[in-house]
Image (cartoon, rainbow, N blue to C red; front, side, top):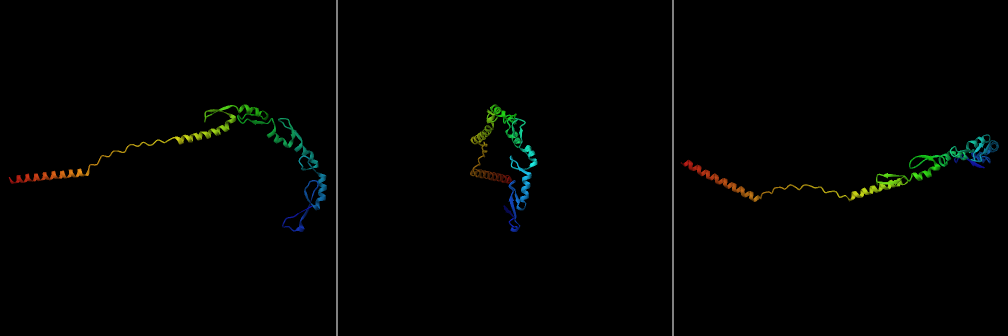
Length: 208
């Protein structure tokens, strides 16, 4: 017997239960005798799955869930509850696709077919070699890694050309400041002499 009550409930109101020896369910002790008689008379435990099944439905239960059936593909006899798993994962005659060419064929023939199909070759555009289909996935990944590494190495070795710039224009040499001063003084002197000579000549002409 067991007492079932909520933690906050009154202990006086706790429901005392008993385990039915037939179905193993917990039943209030006040109803256990009536339940046990009804349970033993009307219910029966399925020997295959352990569920309690009405006696009048036990044959239907057996036929629906446990009766042996034949696989429509391989004709193997198995329990009905295993039929779906068998057809999808275990049946040797189920149709499966080759991983290399995607051709569908019975599972029993797949291994032999893929041994041949996987040995076919295809041309790799990256490395320019012929590769077996069974090695294609690993080769494609490795080939891509090698290609990237080669490109990075080539880029690192390339020295950029220096920009060729035209030479700066040659500026004319500036005259020496002293020479300019001398030329200026010479010009002033010549001009002064010319003015003096002109003045003297003009005075003579007036005197005559």
